[in-house]
Amino acid sequence: MTKADIVDVISSSVGLTKVETEAVVNGFMETVIDAMKRGENIELRGFGSFKVVKRAQRVARNPKTNEEVIVPEQYAPMLKMSKDFKEAVNEAHMVEN
Image (cartoon, rainbow, N blue to C red):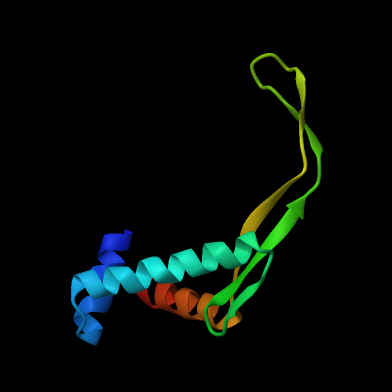
């Protein structure tokens, strides 16, 4: 499902135009990105939690040359899905099988 698909589904279910819905979806995404840039965590109950995690420096290996490469520490966004979300997806797939 793409962002355009999400806009279509939301727009038809809430009665907004696609332009209005796309503005809301873009606003949501920008808000999440801006908050995470500031190091803030975001919790959407029943959906999941966004947070920034620090990944330590590590040694990796170039598979072609077998040369060791140092990967510097970095910060990465993480999304941990809620228990309710996981259960809903699991139940939906269990019914299909």
